[in-house]
Length: 343
Image (cartoon, rainbow, N blue to C red; front, side, top):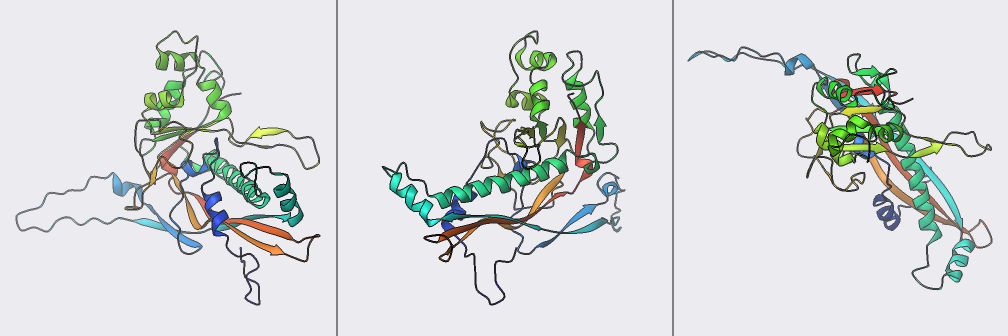
């Protein structure tokens, strides 16, 4: 998005204070940043990554060398993939009269909430929800996985069937990718049935499987993954003008992924509230690690604002929240996808 007019003026100046606010904004249940983690800012919209030839990592060459012999020469082949970030942004207008009215009715500093700050946060929520949907649609998509790295779960094997064996199903998915997955991604509906399944409860609680609910941390320890992530966000499922009907942004599926772009820490399952983005540090020392996917970042989330004196009785404040990024699946062989694990 270009914020410069043809004359060179800047209609939406950068707002550092509100940018700091929105960059610290966290919302429970949104997991996009942890599933396809963001890169450091790239400096330009276009970016490149490599897809290496898989055989080069597994074929064992003859490494024996004579006393004066030359070592065997190997060659690593790969495909350079070029991609480009996409611009996203939303804006809102807040009349100065609304700001004055809010200030007049606040009886203390604790009650004061700047309507422009509120607008920036709400726009941020919608942008993050937009990204959540993009990541969910990419990760919970059969086309994002190789033919041998996906499975449509049929009747009798789904998590809402008490006679099914979810552990056996997931273990198949854990052992198939080229790198053993280190995160498990559930849609909320899939997670609700999985955590209450008798075989899951029996494993994590040691009981007969007839009581209790499994926690994300307990399941992570059983699967030996860094985190179990559950997508809880809801989005509208109705057309504009119709009564609100909600559905889950993440569907009734499960993905087991190798996330190579983060350094994990602590116990399996992450820390309490690990759907936030502050518990794991980003890897910046070596970006050659394989990974199922990532998000290329050109412009991180930022706020821009301006005052328009010609609008309204007292003028109005316009606020723009924007970012430029692109979600990428870079290694189809580093994940396994189970579609429709519940009815």
